[in-house]
Amino acid sequence: MKRIFILALDGTPFTFLKKAVDRGLMPNFAALVKQSDFRQMDSVLPPVSSAAWASFMTGKFPSRHGIFGFVDRTPETLEWFVPLSNHLQGQTLWEYLSQHGKRVFVMNVPLTYPPRKVNGISICGFLGSDILKGTYPPEIGKILKARGYQIDVDTEAAKRDLISFIRQLHSVLDKRIETMRHFWRQEKWDFFMTHIMETDRLHHFLWEYMENNHPEYAPLFFDFYQKIDCMIAEIIQTIPDDMELLLLSDHGFTTLKKEVCINRWLWEKGLLRFTKSNPQTLADMHPESSAYSLYPGRIYINLQGREKNGVVKPGVDYEQTRQRIKQILFELRDPENRQPVVKDVLFSEQLSGQSKQKRQIFSAGNVNGINLSGNSKRLNSTPDMIALGHYGYDLKGNLWRENLFEKTVFNGTHTFDDAFILMRNKLLPDKRLSIAHIASIILSALEVPIPDDMETVC
Ligand SMILES: [Zn+2]
Image (tube, rainbow, N blue to C red; front, side, top):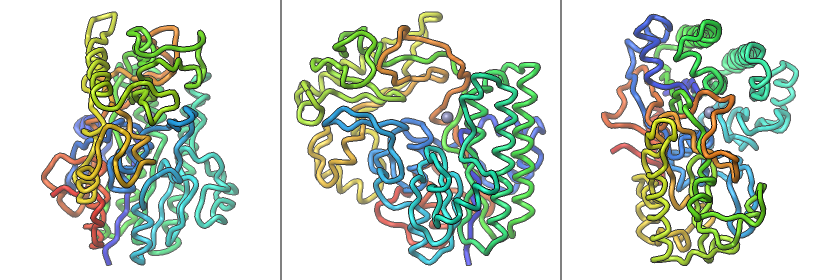
């Protein structure tokens, strides 16, 4: 019977791993690379963990699964909310495999809270707040709590004391590895997946130190990857040779040059106005505003008929507003070196994939945000446009900041085109891959039929 083991390293870049292999820093991973297909891979737009893992688990791009970030808004009320697994449109890979009689174990993948029913065990990841409510079946939560298992590290700790934060990262990872061992031994799983969030956390606070070879923090950064390398060695020794082994990340990382407040830029250009100084919520947006932004780089037009108090008319007015915003985003320059901040701007209709069902949906409806037939709920979360920053510019979604550009405690930020994928036994398709393609590759490795609405690479 075909089986697969997946190790996910959140935010680990292909180029970083390649360097680590070339410099002999990860000998076990290097040995694995020699017998595997190891590639650079694209994330999704925007390249954030909840959107990218939602694409991994559904085999769909965000415009079809509806998850674009850690925050979303209801257009009719302009209230913010945090999208969770119950906002995800479509079935997950592990639900689908469950239906095909496979035994699945999935631990710590972002956006798996609240847990969905599977033929096996599901343990929630990031955005889950309570492990006692975060597992299927529910009694697993009690076992994990008793073992001292944690969903995530306290990132606030990094702002107070970096050394104690790194210590915590190790202890959260140690418990995760112990838990992986515990459940691996329980039975012969068909699909077994462990997700490591700690790499992303490490990168957000230490990436620049690693790149600049900081005397104190760079060695601690590499120590952490040595532990990951030992974990990889253990996995290779434990799983049978005929079990497929897949490693991947959901996006890359780079040194954060500056955070950029996109709403502040829209405000400076007269496209966004507020009813008070220091606005706190979207309710403080002036009705005559043309657009607003959510993290990272998502832009929503204040569209009549969709948004509360929408003033931009569908059709010509809408298109002209998008073109105007695209132009002003490309005008945005770093005041220090005059370098452009925005690398690319995509409109909603450019954010789609290739699956059969998607082609049918998009040919049936219009794409300007109102009448896409079949699923208005999904479309409401699709931004009218997404800006992708040049490496190092983090396009923040704060409604208001005193400064357009800021440098804060974060020193690493995500990249779109530098995720990785590694597959041990099989060759990957000979094409640039996106994380949205991986579900169909997994199903094909497991010899399970690929549903029509899933992205494929043919
Ligand atoms: Zn991150």
